[in-house]
Image (cartoon, rainbow, N blue to C red):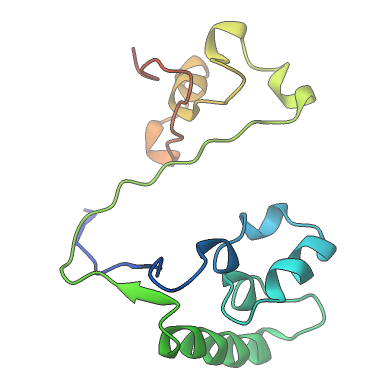
Length: 140
């Protein structure tokens, strides 16, 4: 049985820091040039995720932990005072060739809603859940 526990999450510190210098898009969507641009800031999340292709996994772990530690020491990220539960969702606009495979009734505004798409294929919703941004309930 799954046991959920609240955590004290870390967030970009918007007081005294430009949040745009601290965050970046999901790492696997970035080109090498984009990754270098984001990683140019010493406390950007791109400094500790993802692993550069030319770096071994053990070397990356040591490097990433060091860079994350520097960002935390600099106050670039702050931790919540109390543990809490966090709702997480992903909005994803699939490429046109994939979007064409989704029935029009399940497309919303072009953003794939995981649970509607999964239900249309009898896929168990325990696999994941994407937030629907079409303005309507993805389950209704």
